[in-house]
Length: 579
Image (cartoon, one colour):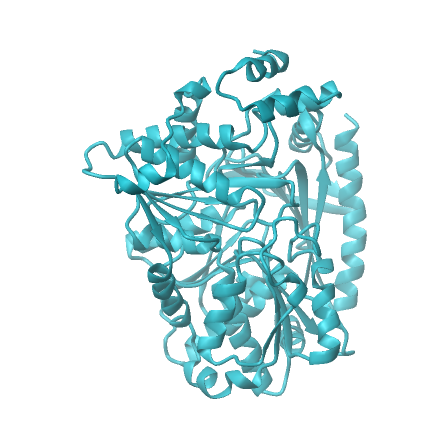
């Protein structure tokens, strides 16, 4: 069925609301119609994510209902021997988040599946915790994380509290594909679901146990108890779900000098002060920096709308406020947590950290210096959660920290996804520790560079929207895989890792080895001087991402080396676009 047939099917369906039909009829650009209907909104390992609008390739109550009906069928088959099945659901501050959450709940209940639905918005990591805490068989969180306001999304979690990974996601997708018509989507009225005992509204009773576990992750408890009041903090929730949990945890630990950016305090899915509400974007901190002139804080940090990512801004040696990269935050946390555990006599011989293949190798260098092993996984925090689960079940390791360069961090074993509530608590403790030693996080970072090398990373994202953009991404990766030269500038490539074929090639020894990771369309090239770059399509946005890393002899040298490296890498990428 081509896109025009699918478009007509929506207009003729008795199940589609007239407002949606009128929206579709008002479209004048046929390319827009094609983009809305040339494919179904993809259900991948991250669930659904798309622009809110009518159409099969958009986020709306029909595509959410279809995905949920498929999920219900999957759960009923997988847990057919159980007396009851439950799913926990959370949502953030985005447009339509509550409506999509209720749509999901009503469909699950209509299929005889019990639902635990939060009374109001909550961070994504609290959903991960709740799935395990309430012993649900699955979880749903409605969020588009840090995307612009026109987006929303739908993420599915397994009973372990982690995002569903490839195998389970494919099985769920198979069930979704069986829902060939909207008439097959079951639904039930909200109040009827409550009256029948199928819909349970949750809140404080779950919140309290989560907060206690987060506070229990504090490492230097005596220091925090005595001196938390001495750390001056500015925090922005960027109109999201972090406002209550982050402030509550910090307040209960004694961080009484916490100042919130008032203009960004209240939940608002239109993100009026931050069109791109991503803590990776320095612009979201401008209001916090304005407040800093009055408050003069020790640290500034912000969390994204679903409060699973955190960005941190610190003063440099010249007194200027500068954002840390996600890699820098992770390296600082790696060193702080391992060194603190060692000092307390709590560092276990089987301790390990987890990072993704696009995350800085400096983390491994730091961990190696303490005798702590590093596990590498594919890009996406779902793989970090899966690694934690596998090691925990095998009883072969003590997890310390997992992180990815895109500002996601996790400690503890009660959440299986990145958690900015936990990260905020640990970042404040780390900043307090260094303040008590007469230094700030900038000085601490410089000390790590001096000790371990001046690592520098950079990410370039190329937006390629629509069907044509997706085709261009695939052609580029085909070129890089099969046709590019074996040098970048005048430096030889010595290793090529193809995560789609699962083969690592040593281009010097002319040998091959298998990569023990799930298959994904990602390439990594390692050069003889230690530089590297990775190319992959984004799993959540219409983008091709290029991750670059170099090591220099100083901050200035690594910056200069990166500028040159980026030019050479982007020349190669440009060649791949020209094929």
